[in-house]
Image (tube, rainbow, N blue to C red; front, top):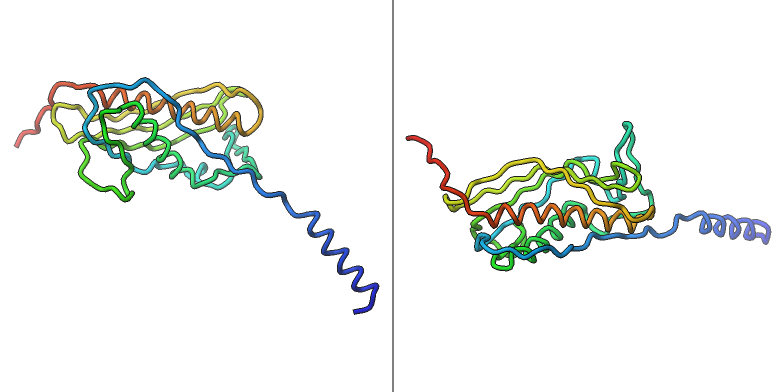
Amino acid sequence: MPFRRRHAALGALAALAACRSPEPALYTMLPVPGTPLTGGPRSVSVREVSLARYLDRTQIVRSAAEYRLDVSGNDWWGESLDAMLTRVLVENLAQRLPGSSVVATGGAISSPADAVVEVNLQRLGLVAPATLGLTAQLAIVHRDASRRDLARTETLTAPVAGADTAAFVAAASAALGALADSLAASLAVRTAPRPRSAG
Protein backbone atom coordinates (compact mmCIF):
# COMPACT_ATOMS: atom_id res chain seq x y z
CA MET A 1 0.00 0.00 0.00
CA PRO A 2 1.43 3.44 -0.90
CA PHE A 3 2.54 5.52 2.05
CA ARG A 4 -0.19 8.17 1.64
CA ARG A 5 -2.99 5.62 1.48
CA ARG A 6 -1.58 3.68 4.42
CA HIS A 7 -1.26 6.92 6.39
CA ALA A 8 -4.86 7.89 5.54
CA ALA A 9 -6.14 4.45 6.54
CA LEU A 10 -4.30 4.60 9.87
CA GLY A 11 -5.70 8.09 10.47
CA ALA A 12 -9.23 6.87 9.78
CA LEU A 13 -8.78 3.97 12.23
CA ALA A 14 -7.46 6.36 14.89
CA ALA A 15 -10.44 8.68 14.37
CA LEU A 16 -12.82 5.73 14.65
CA ALA A 17 -11.20 4.62 17.91
CA ALA A 18 -11.45 8.15 19.29
CA CYS A 19 -15.18 8.28 18.42
CA ARG A 20 -16.01 5.01 20.19
CA SER A 21 -18.44 5.37 23.06
CA PRO A 22 -16.92 4.85 26.49
CA GLU A 23 -17.71 1.64 28.34
CA PRO A 24 -21.11 1.87 30.09
CA ALA A 25 -21.23 2.41 33.84
CA LEU A 26 -23.04 -0.51 35.50
CA TYR A 27 -25.24 -0.11 38.57
CA THR A 28 -27.01 -2.44 40.98
CA MET A 29 -29.54 -1.92 43.74
CA LEU A 30 -28.57 -3.02 47.24
CA PRO A 31 -30.61 -4.39 50.16
CA VAL A 32 -31.68 -1.84 52.77
CA PRO A 33 -31.94 -2.98 56.43
CA GLY A 34 -35.35 -2.92 58.08
CA THR A 35 -36.95 -3.92 61.38
CA PRO A 36 -36.99 -7.71 61.99
CA LEU A 37 -40.50 -9.05 62.65
CA THR A 38 -41.85 -12.26 64.17
CA GLY A 39 -44.90 -14.26 63.21
CA GLY A 40 -44.21 -14.65 59.52
CA PRO A 41 -44.96 -17.85 57.57
CA ARG A 42 -42.37 -20.61 57.79
CA SER A 43 -41.66 -20.34 54.07
CA VAL A 44 -42.19 -17.47 51.62
CA SER A 45 -41.81 -17.69 47.87
CA VAL A 46 -41.27 -14.49 45.83
CA ARG A 47 -42.28 -14.68 42.20
CA GLU A 48 -40.20 -12.78 39.68
CA VAL A 49 -41.14 -9.11 39.74
CA SER A 50 -43.18 -8.10 36.71
CA LEU A 51 -42.19 -4.80 35.05
CA ALA A 52 -44.01 -2.13 33.11
CA ARG A 53 -42.62 -2.57 29.59
CA TYR A 54 -40.98 0.89 29.44
CA LEU A 55 -38.74 -0.06 32.39
CA ASP A 56 -37.63 -3.33 30.80
CA ARG A 57 -34.40 -2.12 29.17
CA THR A 58 -30.67 -2.13 29.82
CA GLN A 59 -30.39 1.63 30.23
CA ILE A 60 -31.65 3.18 33.47
CA VAL A 61 -34.94 5.04 33.03
CA ARG A 62 -34.80 8.08 35.29
CA SER A 63 -38.32 9.38 34.66
CA ALA A 64 -41.41 9.14 32.50
CA ALA A 65 -43.04 12.56 32.41
CA GLU A 66 -44.79 14.75 29.84
CA TYR A 67 -45.09 11.78 27.45
CA ARG A 68 -41.31 11.37 27.31
CA LEU A 69 -38.80 8.91 28.79
CA ASP A 70 -35.60 10.28 30.31
CA VAL A 71 -33.11 7.45 29.79
CA SER A 72 -29.50 7.42 30.99
CA GLY A 73 -27.88 6.31 27.73
CA ASN A 74 -24.54 5.12 29.14
CA ASP A 75 -25.68 4.23 32.67
CA TRP A 76 -26.90 0.64 32.60
CA TRP A 77 -28.32 -1.85 35.08
CA GLY A 78 -25.77 -4.56 35.88
CA GLU A 79 -28.40 -7.28 35.31
CA SER A 80 -31.95 -7.43 34.01
CA LEU A 81 -34.10 -5.16 36.17
CA ASP A 82 -36.75 -7.80 36.95
CA ALA A 83 -34.10 -10.26 38.15
CA MET A 84 -32.36 -7.56 40.22
CA LEU A 85 -35.59 -6.39 41.86
CA THR A 86 -36.53 -9.99 42.71
CA ARG A 87 -33.10 -10.79 44.15
CA VAL A 88 -32.94 -7.66 46.32
CA LEU A 89 -36.56 -8.03 47.44
CA VAL A 90 -35.81 -11.60 48.60
CA GLU A 91 -32.79 -10.35 50.57
CA ASN A 92 -34.83 -7.52 52.11
CA LEU A 93 -37.65 -9.85 53.16
CA ALA A 94 -35.27 -12.48 54.56
CA GLN A 95 -33.69 -9.83 56.81
CA ARG A 96 -37.09 -8.53 57.96
CA LEU A 97 -38.54 -12.02 58.54
CA PRO A 98 -35.69 -13.92 60.24
CA GLY A 99 -38.02 -16.78 61.21
CA SER A 100 -39.09 -17.37 57.60
CA SER A 101 -37.30 -19.10 54.76
CA VAL A 102 -37.56 -16.66 51.83
CA VAL A 103 -36.66 -17.83 48.32
CA ALA A 104 -37.35 -16.76 44.76
CA THR A 105 -39.43 -19.04 42.55
CA GLY A 106 -37.63 -20.38 39.53
CA GLY A 107 -34.35 -20.82 41.41
CA ALA A 108 -32.54 -23.99 42.42
CA ILE A 109 -34.72 -24.38 45.54
CA SER A 110 -38.31 -25.43 44.88
CA SER A 111 -40.74 -26.54 47.57
CA PRO A 112 -44.34 -25.64 48.43
CA ALA A 113 -44.41 -22.25 50.20
CA ASP A 114 -46.74 -21.17 52.98
CA ALA A 115 -47.05 -17.74 51.32
CA VAL A 116 -46.45 -16.52 47.78
CA VAL A 117 -45.55 -12.87 47.10
CA GLU A 118 -46.26 -11.26 43.72
CA VAL A 119 -45.19 -7.75 42.68
CA ASN A 120 -46.13 -5.90 39.51
CA LEU A 121 -43.94 -2.78 39.23
CA GLN A 122 -45.80 -0.01 37.42
CA ARG A 123 -43.52 2.97 38.01
CA LEU A 124 -39.96 3.58 39.18
CA GLY A 125 -38.48 7.01 38.51
CA LEU A 126 -38.27 10.65 39.42
CA VAL A 127 -41.59 12.30 40.24
CA ALA A 128 -39.88 15.57 41.22
CA PRO A 129 -36.29 16.84 40.86
CA ALA A 130 -35.23 15.30 44.21
CA THR A 131 -37.92 12.65 44.75
CA LEU A 132 -38.15 9.13 43.41
CA GLY A 133 -41.51 7.41 43.18
CA LEU A 134 -42.32 3.69 43.14
CA THR A 135 -45.78 2.31 42.38
CA ALA A 136 -46.45 -1.42 42.53
CA GLN A 137 -49.37 -3.81 42.68
CA LEU A 138 -48.86 -6.35 45.46
CA ALA A 139 -50.42 -9.71 46.16
CA ILE A 140 -49.83 -12.25 48.93
CA VAL A 141 -51.47 -15.68 48.75
CA HIS A 142 -51.40 -17.91 51.85
CA ARG A 143 -51.84 -21.68 52.18
CA ASP A 144 -52.88 -21.24 55.83
CA ALA A 145 -56.58 -20.39 56.11
CA SER A 146 -55.89 -18.40 59.30
CA ARG A 147 -54.06 -15.79 57.24
CA ARG A 148 -55.91 -13.48 54.89
CA ASP A 149 -54.78 -13.07 51.29
CA LEU A 150 -53.85 -9.56 50.24
CA ALA A 151 -54.05 -7.51 47.04
CA ARG A 152 -53.40 -3.77 46.89
CA THR A 153 -51.49 -1.02 45.11
CA GLU A 154 -48.67 0.70 46.98
CA THR A 155 -47.14 4.09 46.11
CA LEU A 156 -43.92 5.06 47.89
CA THR A 157 -41.40 7.88 47.60
CA ALA A 158 -37.75 8.29 48.57
CA PRO A 159 -35.50 11.38 48.56
CA VAL A 160 -32.77 11.53 45.92
CA ALA A 161 -29.65 13.02 47.51
CA GLY A 162 -27.93 14.21 44.34
CA ALA A 163 -28.20 14.58 40.58
CA ASP A 164 -25.98 11.66 39.60
CA THR A 165 -27.06 8.12 38.78
CA ALA A 166 -25.59 6.66 41.98
CA ALA A 167 -27.95 8.86 44.03
CA PHE A 168 -30.88 7.73 41.86
CA VAL A 169 -30.01 4.03 42.38
CA ALA A 170 -29.60 4.57 46.15
CA ALA A 171 -33.08 6.14 46.28
CA ALA A 172 -34.50 3.23 44.25
CA SER A 173 -32.92 0.82 46.75
CA ALA A 174 -34.51 2.76 49.63
CA ALA A 175 -37.94 2.66 47.94
CA LEU A 176 -37.63 -1.10 47.40
CA GLY A 177 -36.67 -1.43 51.07
CA ALA A 178 -39.83 0.46 52.04
CA LEU A 179 -41.85 -1.88 49.83
CA ALA A 180 -40.27 -4.83 51.65
CA ASP A 181 -41.23 -3.21 54.99
CA SER A 182 -44.86 -3.13 53.87
CA LEU A 183 -44.82 -6.70 52.59
CA ALA A 184 -43.07 -8.02 55.71
CA ALA A 185 -45.61 -6.30 57.97
CA SER A 186 -48.46 -7.92 56.02
CA LEU A 187 -46.79 -11.34 56.08
CA ALA A 188 -46.22 -11.16 59.85
CA VAL A 189 -49.84 -10.32 60.74
CA ARG A 190 -52.20 -13.12 61.68
CA THR A 191 -55.86 -12.53 60.84
CA ALA A 192 -59.16 -14.28 61.28
CA PRO A 193 -59.81 -17.33 59.05
CA ARG A 194 -61.01 -16.61 55.55
CA PRO A 195 -64.66 -17.44 54.93
CA ARG A 196 -65.05 -20.69 53.06
CA SER A 197 -67.07 -20.63 49.87
CA ALA A 198 -70.33 -22.52 49.88
CA GLY A 199 -70.54 -25.78 48.09
